[in-house]
Structure formats: structure tokens, C-alpha cells
Amino acid sequence: MTQYERMLAGLIYDPADPQILTEQAGFAKRLWAFNQLRPGDTAEKERYMREVFASCGGGCQIELPFRANWGGHHVHFGDHVYANFNLTLVDDGNIFVGSGVLFGPNVTVATANHPIEPGLRSRGLQYNRDVHIGDNVWIGAGAVIVPGVRIGDNSVIGAGSVVTRDIPAATVAAGNPCRVLRTIGEGDREFFFRGERIDWESL
Image 1 (cartoon, helix red, strand yellow):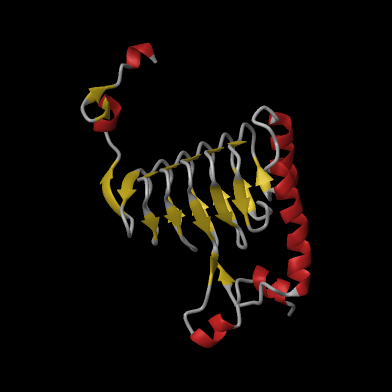
Image 2 (tube, one colour):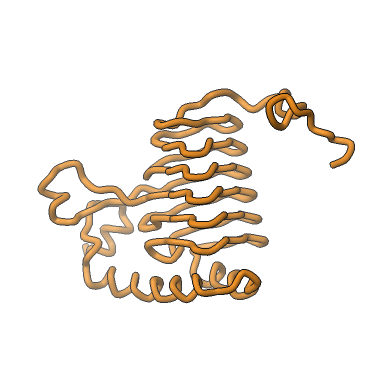
């Protein structure tokens, strides 16, 4: 089994393998060019996501700069995903992002991990675990999502959180480590911020 095959199988592998580095280098070059685009270059941004990402739905938007180990080649976007500035996707493994997801500035989603055993780690070896983010999730500024995490539909991750375990659907979660604070309910249909009412009739 090649190192590339080991990577795809979720086994411990050498990311400095020549075959891996050669393929990765092509995506790095395309990502560099992507980050040189101007704010109004919407068609070029969409073309990049459709050609480089594993899959990308309609109406997605990324504010530059954008960072990704494989340029987004292992990233799966649903429809209408919005990523604010400095999104970092460590996409050695797959990152599945549902429709309607919002990323605040400076969010990091990582799939790559290193063995705890010092000898393996000193050899630069790693393994990957996919990350799954459900539909209509909002991830606040500066949040970090670690390998293997699943976040359920409609949940909110507070700014600065470090998400180390799965978060269920329709909850507000925050902290380091990130914990569920409460479920999303009827009160959220009445108030949008510290007792301020939603003026539904004007929306």
C-alpha cells in the first residue's frame, strides 16, 4: 500500500511522501493564485471552488485570504456557504460542510492529527479524520474544530470555541473545550440579542 493509499484509508502515513507532495503542490499553486483575486472577481472565485473542491453547491462565497493544505481538494460545500476572512481548512482528510453554513473570521477546521507516541511523531507521520458540519450551522469567529468532530444541523458554535467532541443539532455550544450551553427554542424566535425582540412583521 502506498503512502497516498494509506492517507485515503485513514491510516498513519508520511505526508512528505513524494507522490503526495507532487499532487499537493499543484493545488498549492492554484490556491496562491486564488488568493490574488480582487473582491469583485466573483466568477473566478466560483470557478476555483467548482474545479478544485471535491464538491461545491451554488451561491457559495469565500472572503480572501483562504488557507487549505490541499487547496480545498478534500472539501465538500453544500449550497450558500459563506466563509469570512482567514478561513483555514486543514483538508488532508475530508471536510463536509452542509448548506447555509456561516464561518466567522479566523476559523480553523482541522482533519490532520499526529500520533501521541513520540517516535512516530518525530518521524513527521500523521493520520486524518473527517469533519462533518451540518446544515445551517453558524461557527463564530476564531473557533477551532479538531479532527473527527461532527456538528449537528442548525447549531451555533460560539466565538473562540475549541470543538473537541461532537455537538448535537439545534444547540448553542461554546467554550474551551466547547460544551453545549442550551438548546435552540421558542425564545430564539422572540429575541435576537439580550432581550431585543425580533420585528418579524418587518422581515
